[in-house]
Every structure is written in structure tokens, then in C-alpha cells.
Image 1 (tube, rainbow, N blue to C red):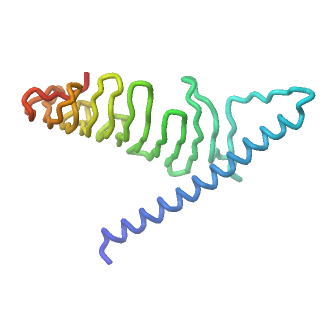
Image 2: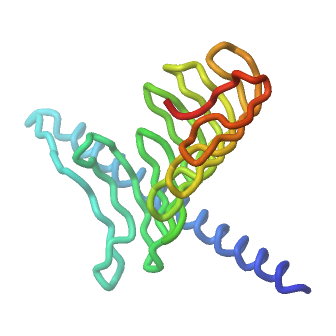
Image 3: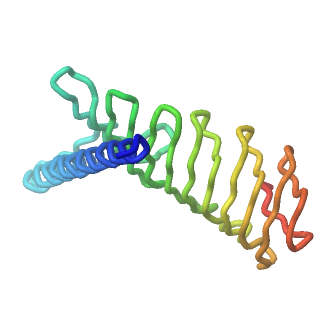
Length: 184
């Protein structure tokens, strides 16, 4: 078996392991939340409310392996952390898989939605999605300076096209000629 195939098999095994861990973590979080809800309902006469900023699950060494909570911006998330820096996160804004050098995210907001791959500086390098505010949908590839360089999609004028951008992110070559999916 070639080294390339062996590498793909090893990566697939790691992804499968992480998916099993994600499933276990979601199960644990669901049990904890249901238990808290049941305890709150069973003590209805005293009407106690449990308020916490977050719930951390730690391993035998005391290291956080899972966390459920709300950040400063009000984003509620469930995160699974590994010692190698790999993190999986499910939030009210989307799903993220984070490693030391890249992030894969599926997200949404009131302005748009998409699937993206980000580098270690959180710069979107490849994106598939749309802007609800500009009514623009497509696939785009950006450079390390977060300047869109290639785009294929539907512009706000409902015209489909292809565009290659210069180093500033401005259209250099487009079909049709006035097609523009550059970042505004």
C-alpha cells in the first residue's frame, strides 16, 4: 500500500475516533442537561433556578475535555478539546472543527451562511456560501491577506459568472465583463 493511501487510512481512523468522541460527549452533555432539568422540575415547590456560566468536564488529570457555556458575545457552545490542540465545537452560530493550523466551519448569521476553511490566522481561504444582505451566492478562494482572488457564483444582479481578482481583491478578469463577487 502506498504512503499516500496509508496516510489517508490513518487520517480516516483519526476522524472516526473523533466522531465517536463527539457522539459520547453529546450524549454526556444531554444527560447532564436532562438531569439538571429534571432536578429543577422535581423541586417545583421551592422554584430554585440553577445559574452557571459554563459546565466543564475534566479527565482524570484535571484537564478540560468538554465544555458547555456562553462566551462574552453571547454565543452558546459545546466544545470538545483534545491534548493535541484539536477542538470540535457546536454553537448557536454553527459547527467548527479546529486544529493547530486550520479550521473548517459551517456557520450562519443574520448576514449570511456558508462553509469555509480558515488558516491559523482565522483568514477564510476557501468559502462556499452566500450573503443574505447582498443576495450574492458562490464559491470563493482567498489569499493569505484575506483578499478574494477567484470567485464563481451569482452576483446581486442575479447574473452568474466567474471572476479573477488582483492582489487588492478587485476584479481583474471577469465573465461576464462586469461580474463582481469581491468583498464589499
